[in-house]
Length: 193
Image: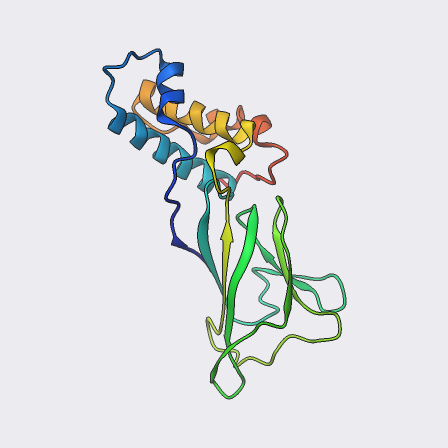
């Protein structure tokens, strides 16, 4: 269903932030701390099903009303794009009823910090598809474009997870993460344990 097709290239928080919290001097292993920040970011993204730094995802569906992403509402319903904050829909392709590949550009994308919505323009309908498994592919970009754009609560959560990883040599348990849920509230983040 969802697959990350292009991972982020930027770190969510500066390594020096983690170094400061840990009270380490200039002789620390920056490469190791950087790895902990990347692990913590991945962990937070998977736990809360949210994207932190800009990345690209592909949503593959078996039809426009595939219950895994289709939501009722409006004249024709919409496809919900998870992994907020969605910033753009790159491409929508589908296999038509004659099993020919097509690109669909007659859609409206409503993108927000909470989640994206993809729907036909109000006078249009969903294009006919073959109904084959995976006949629809929606590529979209999501995440923040710079460290400065990452909300403070998200950055703190990543830093806290990285600190836990450093101090305990493991990623935190789901119970431990519940204590951080309040920092993530307001960022469309929902815990998926």
